[in-house]
Length: 235
Image: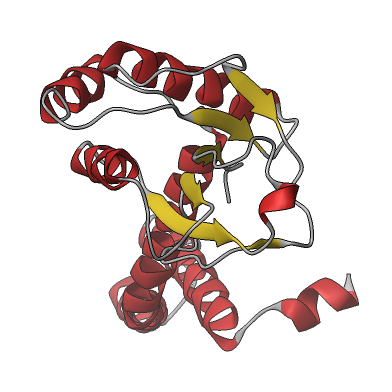
């Protein structure tokens, strides 16, 4: 319990105090306003009943005013905390949206597919090996979607339509975008094939993030001179 109390920030204490004062003001203000004069009229009492009632009503009014002030203080605290609460809510909402996006499976939409094929209709074509560097089902499924997209756009796959390929120490990554979904790998960074350049433009044109990389040791390639399109796992 004590650890929980110490974990509360100053804003949490202000907000809690505001709620507490509002509750006090509302509850006790409600009770005081509905109280009636409690003393029955006594014929033997020399002090006029109206005088006693006026004294009692005066005290009652003071208590009503007091609980109204308590309510106002509570509302003031809540208003003071409101901007911070809104900011915290926005941060939480943004975090939830980011988490939802991460949990969603990546897909190639029909619109992306149509635009990709149209964009690369007259572009040079060549052999592309699609690989994945993760055993996650989501990554492998997305890899097959990329393979299907390339097939429809006219890029042949060769003997191996898709490979699950573990990168080695010789695999030098020069990411232009750290959150890339698709990584282009070419054996010669200074003389990339024209079709690989156009292919990357096609991916970028339909909103599929990419990064360019190259190999320093061609012996580590699964195929000599291969151009790889490697599907990353989600960050």
